[in-house]
Each structure stands twice: as structure tokens, then as C-alpha cells.
Image (cartoon, rainbow, N blue to C red; front, side, top):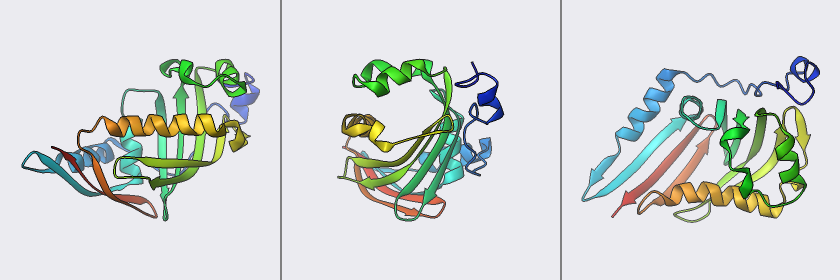
Amino acid sequence: MGGFVPGLSAAMGAGEARDLGVKATEADRATAIERLASVQVKDGQATVDQTFTEAELSALLAYQEGPLESAQVRLHEGGGIEISALVQKSQLDLSQLPAGPAAQAAKLLPDRVPVYVRGTLALQTAQQVNLTVEKLEVGRLPLPTSVLGPDMQAMLNESINRQLATVPGLRIETVTFTEGAIHVKATAGK
């Protein structure tokens, strides 16, 4: 199934991820991986002090196994972030959604659904970030952010922070956004 209403959805572009104008290549992915590999390790502690472009972040998401396809990331000064991707519903654990209208609606979506999220990412603690969703689109349908509700917003942040918690000894010192890039200074280990 290509969209919500076969034929019409495709004609309206609802079967494709929103184009944010970020062109990610395998070379961008290789550069991002090279930056990650250049992490300095001393006395069992790794130090990251790197800037990543939105093309590099997009490539890391777009060229990996997982639920995201055709992912693009745009970064804005002050912590603004936009993410657009085709989400493969079959690769998500929908059982984690809180019961309610959003969980019921998720079950009705096609397996490949375009999603667009705009929000603000901020450092909460040295081990946690907080993503505040300001705009959400599924297909080309804008959804009120109230659809997320506090439970789903908390679940989204818990999911992000659970991933961060898998990094032993993670301590994020700074996360700085500029137009088109993010600079991360952090340590991990020991």
C-alpha cells in the first residue's frame, strides 16, 4: 500500500518522505564514521569533540538497517531539528505505545509511512537529552502535537535516552547547534 488513499495519496506525495533539501551520500556516511572512529582514548576514557553536518547525520540514518528509510536531518541554530523519513512500521515495536487513539491510529497506517518531525533538542543532564516536538506530520497530514500527549512525548525521550544510556560512562559536556551542523563534546568510558 503506497499511502492512506491508494492513488490519491501517491498523487499528493503522501507516499514519499518530505524533501528537506539535504543530500546525503555514502561519502557523508564514511566521513561521519571516520569522525566517530577518530575518538581519542586515554586511560580507558574516550573523548569526542566533533562537529557533524546535517548531511553526515542524514547519511548515518539513511544508510543503516532499521525502521528509517530516505532519512534527512536539518539542524538549526539554538537546538532546532527537523527529521523526515519513511518509517517502516513493521520494524517498530508498537506494543510500547500507550493505549489510546494514537496507538489505534498507528495500527491503521501502511507499512511504509512518511513522517516529518520538527522540534527542539536540548541537553537535559550529562547523560540525557530532551526533544520537544513542535510539529508532526504523518503522510502529508499535520497532526496536533497534543496527539503525542505527555505520555508519548515522555516515551519518545525515554527511547532516545535509553539509547544514550547504553554508552558506558557517557558524560555530554556540550551540544551546540549552528545552521546545518551540531558540535558535540563528550566523554565515555571508565
